[in-house]
Image (cartoon, rainbow, N blue to C red; front, side):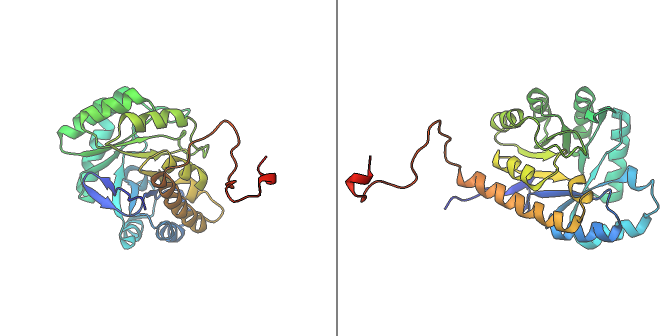
Amino acid sequence: MQTDMPFTVYGEQFDSRLLIGSALYPSPEVMQQSLLASQAQIVTVSLRRQNSVSAGDDFWQLIKDTGLRVLPNTAGCHSVKEVVTLAQMCREVFATDWIKLELIGDEYNLQPDPIALLEATEILIKQGFKVLPYCTDDLVVCQRLADLGCEVLMPWGAPIGTGKGLLNPYNLQTIRERLPNHTLIVDAGLGLPSHAVQALELGYDAVLLNSAIAGAGCPVTMASAFHHAVVAGRAAYVAQAMPEKEVAAPSTPTMGMPFWHQN
């Protein structure tokens, strides 16, 4: 049986390859139940957005009660100054040097600003942060982020919240092949468990999603479905799929068959 490599984020190992968001759920209780049903071990939270609602301490207590590793993010930021300031606040509030770096460059599709992303990453790494940058599926941008010291990269599958799945599997596969030793996580754009299966089958180490679960008719059940999807996708990648063929090939051997049945 093929053995698997552990899922590692900046030296920390995790059993689950599903990272989950904490926004947009119908209620805090549904959020907590969904987090548990997903069997995820990492949850991303937005300090900026959470401060704008009335959930307050109750929200943080629910997050803490799950026991999940918290990954703060800079969602909603549009400038280098904003993300650096927010990252510093997150480090104080959550007592972690992990930061999921989101820096939006266009409001139409919420596409990350690649130039500002590189600038902010360089600043944050010099300040001791372990940066998980959310980026597009651009190979050169991913290589530049890796050159700056990012051990984890998070290219999108599709624009945030669209649920379109992997729009460009070729780009994602190329990034995987060119950066074989980096932890790669598909972030954003997934809508179905089958999208997560596809990402893991491409060799991605994990997926991060929010809307696909929070926006489902039954978030708790969908969270469980995504858990099984990442397990299946990873197992398929480790098992190594059969090569595709251009012509049909019989799956039943002819050895032992009567000769009059072999032609």
